[in-house]
Length: 372
Image (tube, rainbow, N blue to C red):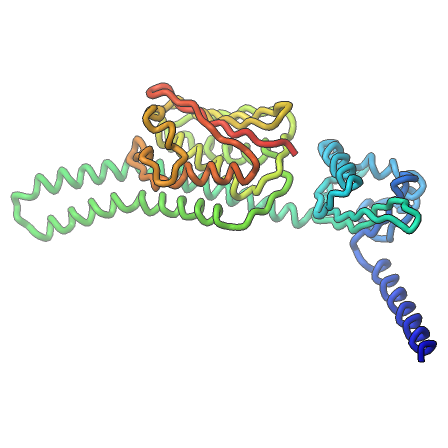
């Protein structure tokens, strides 16, 4: 009976090995095994040829060929991930880019595992998948989302002034026509007053609700180039400078600055801070954003030359439902939740936020983030 079981077990093992062998040959994902001590690959499946548009034999002979294809901006990051993996830190979903000889850039998703054999030798085995199209689609969706948020902010600020004027004129009209004792006229005037008052609030509530929903969603951090993503937001505000009568400026290093962030949440923070600056800055004022890479982290500054924050509110600005909430210069409403949520989201990213402000001179918000 035991011999029969052993024979059946060997047959099953052979079937499984045959099936996995076919799977390894047919899959479009790269499966690899890297010998750490020998600094060489000992296995690559045929999918490697499709992604790198090169032969796996050349890399098995000389691994340096593969390393040279890694995007220059990703090499230091991958080296750090490699050493952390060797130290025992689990790694998954590592994104990186390669540049092929024809200058084509591909984005890859790597899931590596550190494995030791019976002799104690270390190997890195894993799966690598090309996600270039997926990343392009996500990037487009994120770009449209950033554009949508910026346009809503611009729209709410742009409409606030005219609608406030309509509301004021409606009140004057109501006073002027009160002597007519015409209920129909009074009813129409009341409709104008209420509609103008509710219109901007409706847009602001929608923007605020998006911010709240983003904050309540689960965290999903990944490596993001802050220069690129914040630049996309500022680009939208620059396009609307004439509508909201503000000037926007962005100062960044001449290279990518990477941080691990939940892009949706963190960009909502940036958008919200810029929106607040717009609300409390006079026409033709300046709103400047700066990204600075420092030895100990990344510093993001959003500065305006607006009306500033009264000193009596400084200590409670980040409190929930703070007394510091106040309408904007065009009557834009405030829920008082924004700054509290901003601080919470920044702290979720292991960052710190603070501000400096002086009445009638302006305000500067600082966000200090850890580097990748």
